[in-house]
Length: 326
View (spheres, rainbow, N blue to C red):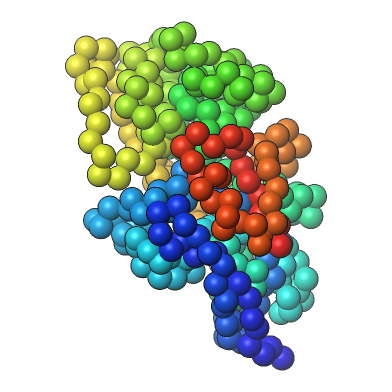
């Protein structure tokens, strides 16, 4: 039924250098499907690290993602926010849209077990947010937040905004987004939260999420927590050392500092039978909100992606999510 297919994939080949390479895609195996990419999204935090060649040797194994090719630092084919159409296959999949953890590539094979059907009413572009929504959902689970909690999110990047979106859906929750960029104010308001500059960060918060990946941001998060409050750290620092204020309020207030990492399902939920597939399906259901389209700030055709990488992954890059179309 299937022959070899010829496609192209994005490869990171040097610091902030990328190119499209020809890919020969063999016929899919019995437990695989052939997929045609519809859209993918750049994960700015992770892919900036990849494109900069800054993955520490000790983290090479943990940073590997499904369907990655090559080796860190370069050349490497990397990415995990893909929406594709099943070219053929069993009746429940043929012609359907799926979300799959796969690099930027126009034609590819993937194991059937890794395909996640996208609800028909979720637009293709919005579905590219599924992996980041999954990260935000896992953080909410790790935090154990509940209705009417006082919640602050420090860092208004994509993940921070998705955490804000989810936290504000809890009945009676009082949610504040803290960021240095005033452009995030409108998004916070739209999601049902307040927005403040770090100098005005609230105190006595039941739960604080930190997503800015900066030392000042983490200090702000710790100082915002109430006595016996919880700070959930979502940022990834690699081998970068940090000066963290663990005296004063942190110590006297018995503030809890916990990590949240999407590579592991939150332990409480895992113990109740949640796995990677069911968590991702939940993330896809949570995308059923038109307000989330405001996070998609640029659309770019796949052939233009390599030349745009330095601009899109720069530390001061404008906007939030770039959707790549195929």
